[in-house]
Structure formats: C-alpha cells, structure tokens
Length: 190
Image 1 (cartoon, rainbow, N blue to C red):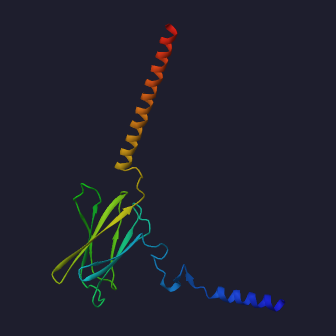
Image 2 (image 1 turned 45 degrees about the vertical axis):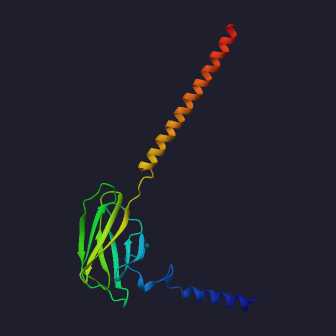
Image 3 (image 1 turned 135 degrees about the horizontal axis):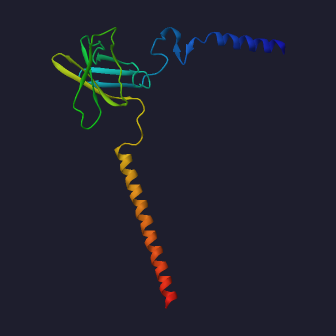
C-alpha cells in the first residue's frame, strides 16, 4: 500500500514539473502581447493577398496605447508583402468623412505594426492600405475603444415609443373610469 502511494506521488510530481506552458502557450514565446489575447483577429483574402490582422490589447481603452499587427502574404507562394502599409482612422458614424493618418509602416519581420491611442470612447474604422503591382489594396476593419453605452438612437426611439404607449394606456383607463363614475352618478340621480 505504501509503495502504491509513493508511486502516485512520484507520478504526480513529475507531471507537474513538465508544465512549462501558460494557457497552452510555451513560456519562451511570451512577450508584451501575451498577457491578453487580441480584441480582434481577422483573416481575409483581398486580391492576390491573404491578410491577417490583430488588435492589441483585448479591450482597448481611452488614453491607453494599443497596437495593430498586420500580416500580408501572397496566396500563391505565401511570400510576405514587402512594401509600405499606410494606416488611417475615421469615426464610424453616418456623417464622418474626415480621415486621419496614423502612420506609414515598413515591414518588420513579416509584420506591419501600427500603434494607436485614442482620447475618446467610440467606434472607429481603421484602414490599412498598400499598393502592389500597380493595384491598390484597402482593408477596413472596425475598432471599439472603451465601453459604449447600450442606449443608442434605436434604444432611445424604443424608449420613447414605450413611454407614449404607457401614457395612452393611462389616459384611456382614466376616461373609461370617469365615464363609469359619471354613469353611476346619473343612475343615482334618476
């Protein structure tokens, strides 16, 4: 019996010493982005290129730095695009037409990195654009900074409709109640 317990303890101890991964990632691959997953990871195909982009940190907040990582490889031979990628941003609203350039980035170990820091909470559209073989490539993706309130224009409209319906219901009930009281008084007076 003592031998079986000893064997179990040794087995459990040896398994514990092999665990060098954190949440399934090897410890040697940890860096500044490893403490949180990206807020967004999208893979898409545009023209001759396969594009993958990620946004760090997982939940971007106002006045805190963040970063976009973009990978662009050819579909045919998986060769990385080697040029300049321009990153720009605009508000994600119906009436927004003003775009601001975040930066132009050269390739860095097959990745294009672009930092950002927004002061205001809101929804934004990030645009990554480059030109290859005389053809323009433009990739748009949404980015939310901070937590947006749940009441937008549709929520406000629904709230107004609910308040109006409740008001009409209360007014109708009062009219019905007043007519019943009036009829009861008329019967007493007859």
